Amino acid sequence: MKRERNPFKIPKAGLEVAAIGTIRSIKSNLNNSNLSNRKVLARSTLSGIAIHSTYQALLAALRTEALFNRGSISRKMQLKMIIQSLYDSAKSGFAISALLGIILLVFPWLNFPISVLSVLGASTASFDLFNAFWDGLDKSQQANLLSASMEAGVNLRRVINTQLNSRKHAF
Image (cartoon, rainbow, N blue to C red; front, top):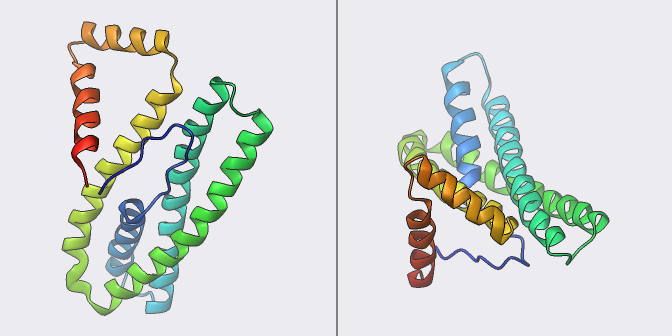
């Protein structure tokens, strides 16, 4: 899946984060046999919305902070963009989480494949968060972070270049 790295556009959370909340909630609720399917579905949906919205709010805050630091937007506009992104994310998070919850209640054998996909989705989400954080730094902060990582024995430049190259070749 190709991800945009446009610093002027806030990326949208997708299936990569909704699966994490839904699968976690379904597993913990199925261990408690006292709950009805309706309660399991409600809890898994709420859990999916919470994780989806939290991720989107963090992503929007990091991306808009980069825009604010460049002088492209004001703090008031930044807050407005974050709230709008959070609202949109809660709506889509509800739909995705409810659908995944229903699918997992009807086909419980899909727990394992969706668990694997949620782990892969978490790695995609963490790269998106890192990119949003990195784009928000100015050149001197990026240089300081690169030198500190080299002192710690981590080649951060290689990680950044790998991400950039993989995004160029994604289709």
